[in-house]
Amino acid sequence: MASPSEAEANVSHVEKKKKPPVRYWQETRGKTKDDNKAEGQLEQQKEQQTQREKKRKRDEQPGGETKVISGKSDPFPGPAPIPKDKLEKFKRKGKIQKPHQHHYKLKDIITRSEEASEMAQKQAARFDFLLPEDAGFLEGDEDEDTCMISQEDIADAVDITSGAKYFNLKLCQFGPYRLDYSRTGRHLLLGGRRGHVACVDWQSKQLMCELNVMESVNDVKWLHTEHMFAVAQKKWLYIYDSNGIELHCIRKFNDVLRMQFLPYHFLLATASATGFLQYLDVSVGKEVAAICTKTGRLDVMCQNPHNAVIHLGHSNGTVTLWSPNQKEALVKMLCHQGGVRSVTVDKTGTYMITSGMDKKMKVFDIRAFKPLRSYFLPTGASCLSLSQRGLLSAATGDIVQVYRDVWSTPVTKPYMAHRVRGSVWGLGFCPFEDVLGVGHGEGFTSMLVPGAGEPNFDGLDANPYRSAKQRQEWEVKALLEKIQPELITLDPSELGHVDRATFEQRHQDRVEALGFDPLGKEKFVPKHKKKGRSSAAGIERRKRQVGHEDQRDVIRKTVEDRMKLEEDRNRMKEKKAALSGKRSALDRFKK
Image (cartoon, rainbow, N blue to C red):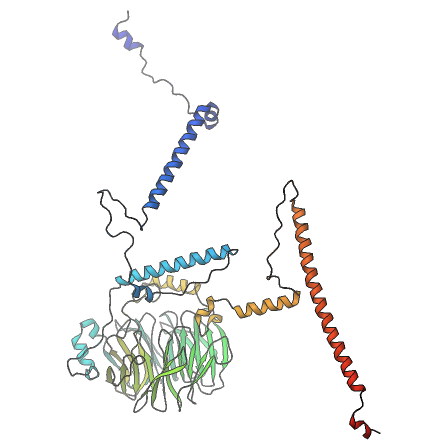
């Protein structure tokens, strides 16, 4: 018998060799029928488990009460309810009429688009609660009119940051001034009549550039970003950058008096002293359209932000609406007995406000092209401007008056008033700020107007706090999403509709050309025959045979109609011949 030490000596310290791993070809060979049966049972169990989970999820829908770990039921099942007024605020459009059953693909696309639109509406209504700011208005004490409160009192009452937004720039040498705020509301562009041009970051009071063009300036306008602006000088149109460097001199655009920039179309619309309305695509630098309005000097101009239609005021008291797609005016409205001095349109595209030489200020509903209100101003309004919240500013001489709710209720007195040093030449509300910019003969004045600006901005569209990187990204995206000028119409909602009149006319022309209605009768579908009699060739032969029979009926009918027409013509000829063969009472006078 071996001793324990000998037994330990016989045990090797080297581990036994492991079997090599089984490859997939060996595994399949080694499997038996029992293994395959076991795998099939496992798959069946997995399918049953997934079906149970689907059934459980279906039972736990918002309609029924769900059980939690504690065993209690949810007292508020489903998503939180949304107020109806919020849903109505963000309602987009009505439901589209779905086609017949055989257009199943189109039906599916319409259903999915409606579901996405409904989800976006609900999300916008929910996120509306998260908007942090509210718009306020100026309220006076008892028996105190808000129009009697001076700008100095308002600047003293508000915080230091808001009070710094009221300031005056004394620029007596090169006035009067026209102005324009950028879409973000952060940058200000000033253009003096005698050649002075300056762009300023007005909130930080930092001067970006300043130059003298050495000729008269009629108008200034920012382009798509705060790094480019257009100046309508005495002779031609010039484009400058924010450093004051001249980028372009566009000599096709001569004698320009007024300009408007369409941000979503990248179009600069100009009105000239020669009566031409011209459109310049600033993304490619090409002239899109040049329209001769045949109405003389064009010095009154504004745009409708809702549909990008240009409104022009004329000396005969009419206001015309223009699109680059047509050489004639879309609409002509007689608004005043004298010449039109100023025109402005609100951001929803619903109301238009005009002032004329007859010292009247009128409010029109553009949807019906009818006047709603008419106000008499003792000296008339030379400049008009509307804010994002619907406040109207009117300049009468050297006095600037601000009105509230001019289209909903009759207004008897202004909301605010302020006197500037010289006659007003330009007005403009700053976006997203309670500030009104006034350009006059003695320089520029920034007024505080509580409740003028939109308190909540869309960070994806016009963000006042965007960085340089965000601005670059936004510019690329805006260029990719540029709207073509062919889509500018009076009613933008028509773009999503089918032109049924044109479709019916085309269908009628097709019917007349073919001699039968191809859409009038459903296509013949042959029945499936058994015992191999429904081969592809047999089905096509039966289809062709039925088609020939239908065509024969149509041809027979058309031949019968032609024969009837021929018979009627022959009958008429016979009648005429019979009538001509009879003797009349006047035949005795023939020689």
